[in-house]
Length: 214
Image 1 (tube, rainbow, N blue to C red):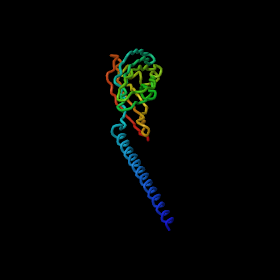
Image 2 (cartoon, one colour; image 1 turned 135 degrees about the vertical axis):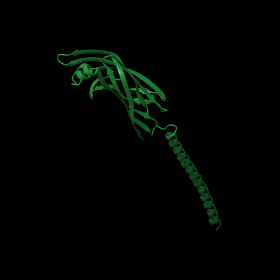
Image 3 (spheres, one colour; image 1 turned 90 degrees about the vertical axis):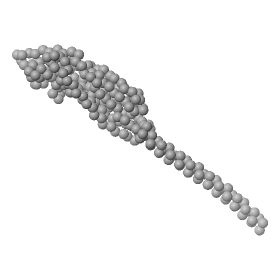
Image 4 (cartoon, rainbow, N blue to C red; image 1 turned 30 degrees about the vertical axis):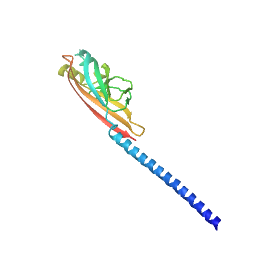
């Protein structure tokens, strides 16, 4: 009987030790789970407040006429133009991380047809900074002369309506989970006064398409 009682007491002690260890492990697991939930909530709040994705901005700051040469053949009712224009392009990154953009290819249209373009290589903009890029657009004379309205616009009206387009694609990697991809387009309508060889008017506006991926 004494042996049996002794064995029962040893089992009770072992059970108590096991119960205490199990309870301690459960507390540790609960603390870890609470810490994980708290970190997740904090991480999510930061992503949508401090690190909330913002739209980078692109704008054509100015377009200036560098060179204009006009030759009119009255016998054949044809006009030949050589036009060179300078442009200034600004890209602003308001995010707290850097922004990587792909190659940019500004181009110019006349009568709905592309008549000139230029290549700007891909690059990277630091957090909360603005970069300015200058470029030169040369209008291709052969593409202009193929338009049947060119003679009337140049000789009779003395005004050439041109449109400059700039499209920008890039991405902002906010963190491991959030990636911001965007496409920005900017358009400038230009009125080229042939008689005074100046830009009589220009109107620009931009549009942004933004996509956040997880």
